Amino acid sequence: MIYRVLAIALISITMMSPAHAVNPDEILEDPALEARARVVGKELRCLVCQNQSIDDSDADLARDLRVLVRERITQGDSNEEVIDYVVSRYGDFVLLNPPFKLKTYALWFGPWVILMFGIGVIWLFYRRRHASVSEGNVTVNSLNEKEATRLKKLMEEDKP
Amino acid sequence: MKRLIFILPLLGFLLIGGYLAVGLTLDPQRLPSLIEGKPVPEFDLPPLAGRDDVGFSSDDLKSEVSMVNVFGSWCVACRVEHPFLMKIKKNDWVPIYGIDWRETDREAGPAWLRRFGDPYTLVGDDPKSKAAIAFGVTGAPETFIVDKAGIVRYKFVGPITEQSWDETLKPLIDQLRQGSGG
Image (cartoon, rainbow over all chains, first blue to last red; front, side, top):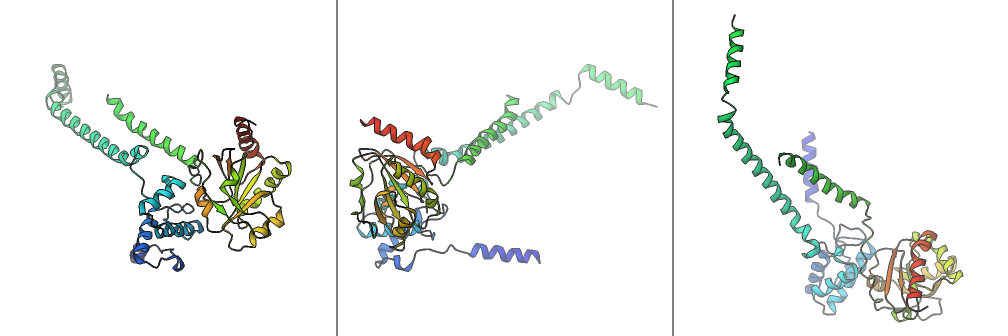
């Protein structure tokens, strides 16, 4: 029973899609321009509710940014020009997709470096264990003279 | 070498933990300001209803050290800040210019200033965030310190208090006044 409830909950959560906040009165008449505005809007972070794009956010500032994006697109700006303008006001932070540049190398390369490091550690660990096991056959498993005598003595002692 | 293997995870933990610990002390609402060191953005706002000035534009900020305060009648923190702005006005410490941001009602801003007092030299009406976005405003109140040459020198987020005035804003304003020859 509980699994069924969980399954239903999970399915309904995954089927939810974020509601768009673009209001009817903002939409441009030219569908091509509106489509471009949507593309730009998805790239830009709402500064108030920080994990939503301006297209998804109901915040007033997000609305004003959407209107601004549409105004600039209507005036003939390219998508990049519009995004550059907003970035010049709010910084890279406003981009939901972090740019690839010197300051963000750690962000882009960090996970790969850590992954490589982990693979390296695992490789070292197995190589070493393998080495010690094969060495062990020679040194650890065979007793030296002193140990052999002692073992023999102990065995003797144990005899009834 | 063998010991290093055991110390490495600890070092890794301390490194990541250190970064996260610093991250915890940062305020995600406090964003880096890009406008500091740059000229005041171009804007030209109409006046508030009932105020007999001609509005507020970037050209008004090029003669003396001044403060640009973004506020709105809807903004609770602005009400907290307002008495201190009145104090600045009364003592004539620095001219304050206002951007009345995102008023839905043309009467709301003027009514607010009538009720609580008007500390502003000039006020512009900015219902569509034109100037606010140009300044990179994310919330109200925000205050910008502008020098004589019209360069934005500092962005202050949140309500100005006696303490932030004494510790941050006043020293900066004094310094800017001296630096550019009185």
